[in-house]
Amino acid sequence: MYLNARRAVTIAMLVSSKLSNRTELGSMKTPSTIEPPQKQEPNLPLPYQQIDLDNPGPSKNHWVIWLIVFGLIGYGCYRLYLFEGAKEQTASAHKGMMKMGGAVPVAAVAARSGDLPVYLEGLGTVTAFNTVTVKSRVDGQLTEVTFKEGQFVHKGDLLGVVDSRPYQVALDQANGTMAQAKGNLAKDEAALRDAQANYVRDQELFKDQIIAKQQMDTQLATADGIKGSIQADQATIEAAQASIDAAKLNLVYTRITAPISGRIGLRQLDAGNMIHAADANGLAVITQLQPIAVLFTIPEDQLQSVLKKLQQGITLKADAYDRDEKRKLASGNLLTVDNQIDQTTGTSKLKAVFPNEDYALFPNQFVNVRLALDTKKNAIIVPAVAIQRGPMGTFVYLVQSDKTVTVRAVKTGLSIENNVAIEDGLQPGDLVVVDGAEKLAEGMKVALRDSKGPKE
Image 1 (cartoon, rainbow, N blue to C red):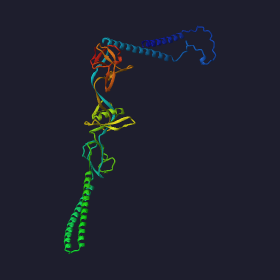
Image 2 (cartoon, rainbow, N blue to C red; image 1 turned 90 degrees about the vertical axis):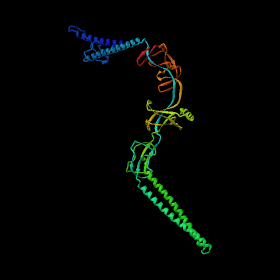
Image 3 (tube, rainbow, N blue to C red; image 1 turned 135 degrees about the horizontal axis):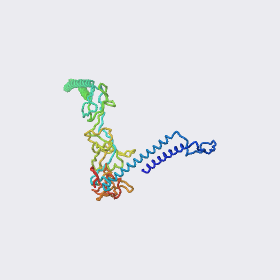
Image 4 (cartoon, rainbow, N blue to C red; image 1 turned 135 degrees about the vertical axis):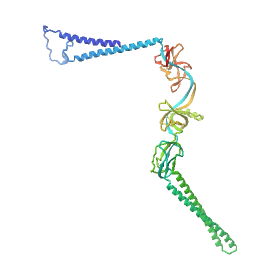
């Protein structure tokens, strides 16, 4: 860099000197100078004419040449400045290394032994555990809406009122029919008793041959006819009772109540409008948020390990994380596995249930689910940043007791978050470099640093 800068400055100075010499030579000619006659050149095209490069004619663009010269000089100075600055930084870094005894500053942590959970991860969507569209059971005018949009309602809370007057009239009519039927029944029962008494008397008179047998048979037929009227009255009473029960039920249905507990959505119908049992949208929609479900998928290759745990009666824990997988939202349990695999994606759908006590989960929310499948006991764990990769595979820089590093090949296993399990190559307590590994080579001396600075 330094030679390039000096070369640019030298070239600029030579060009400037050449231009000055040309100007001086042109001004030294005198009238007494006798020049030999010049041979006139024929009119040739420009490429065939002889051009004198050492004695160019006067030009009006000398200032452009001077501008280029000064630009080259400035560029050379700038490159020289950068070279000197880099030189000072290199000297400063070298001086710092000398103070540290030539050791490379690195950060290292000790490999530890611990339990490492085995997770299955999947993308999921929060769904309400139950979703109900609140509809009226009877037709009529909606006279009152008693809920606020978005509020939490409990099962049985009053949500709206339908005009009950038509159904009250129907109830009164059914009660009148009932009373009339009971009156007819009482009348027929009295007539039956009279007919039965007359039949008994006719039997005695027939024995004494006072009346004909035909008269006795007529009295018997009369009694039997009254029995049929009584049965008809009883049927009328039962029908009237059914009408009364239906009218009472319709009166109950004029009060629209919440079928489940949950969060109610936006109102679909205002007071004063006609509401029908056949309306598609209903009055509002209630979604149950406690508990709440999450549907997520895992690859079909991982399904057997989950089914094996479920067949053993083991409850698998599931954790829901946000979109960035940085914040844990809720914890729950796996509820069930779908009965088929999606052929288009090669995944299986699972359903987990969360208590959702703090309402951290909301219907249609996107989450990342981690299903705790197992726990790896007594695993040797190091940070993931300690693992280096090269042509020979994975390795770490191991800090030895003499503060030098050596390259140690390792076999990695399960990786969870920022931790990696080491299957072979390390022991608990071994120091591995986690920062500054790009500056290291086999056998180099290092200085372990912490938040306070480097230390030997």
